Image 1: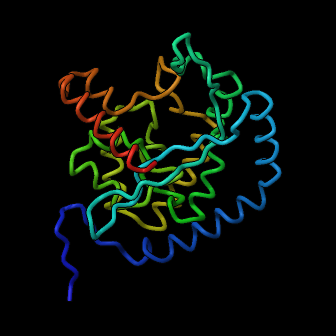
Image 2 (image 1 turned 180 degrees about the horizontal axis):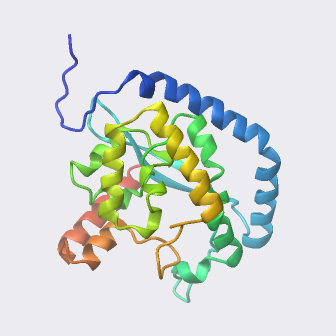
Length: 248
């Protein structure tokens, strides 16, 4: 008897994705943590010296959709810190361009800031290859179709990342994510891993958005291009804040 779902955010999961992919995640993330433990220690010390504490940057991100509720499970992502906590006279954080130091930019350009995500893969919140985990404030602006990307676990790298990363538009990134979830297989994941090594560590393509220190949020992208009104933008931003507040 087939299980019934009272929502549309559901996708049939194949044998590879359900069982083999998880085994690969555990093996690869566990080995990475052990083999590169020395690198974790060195980077942690450098972050502590150059940027202060905390060494790790944590943030809530939307993860895999619960098939029973049709809602994303929100999890904590871990990265090495790349920005300072500099604030203005009113106690507000300064812009990303000011807070992102040369050392922090180097960590991002080499993708070394993402090393702690191996622990997210090990605990099952993430996977090695899948749609990148976006922000909660990005998720609230996504359509039902775009949220289908969350029927797969968020990944350390994905099809959108090897197809342009932040140098391509949000529309194209989300389309690549939807394309990926329709063709999840061992060979496709292996191809993405090989392309990730080439583009992220050798060519360093698309790591930052042209003319910006950090990539533009999805809601800001929609507002900037006048795809949504200011009222809708503010309403959905409040929705994101309410979701995050409920987690604390």
